[in-house]
Image 1 (tube, rainbow, N blue to C red):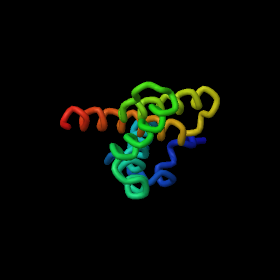
Image 2: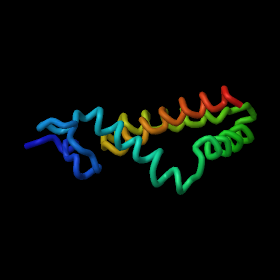
Image 3: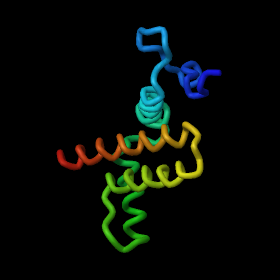
Image 4: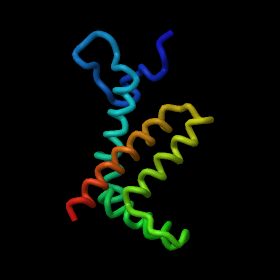
Length: 112
């Protein structure tokens, strides 16, 4: 029986020009890409703006400065914590997406 994550149609993935399915790592990364560059980007607006708002709220609550990229990292760590007990692919997709967003936001901060 094939591994359930090898269902490339379920996550809208193609094969890489080969007969075998995409490796799981590629499926997770492609799903993460589709999340942060697709529908969610349209729903929540710019990742920088969204995480800037989250960081401002956490800064007020905690009484310390939280930068937007740190907010994304903390969300990635929340997903890492969840992965300790929830091994569904969605948890790993989201965690990968948050790590990618953290890097993009950090790079955007360097430019401003």
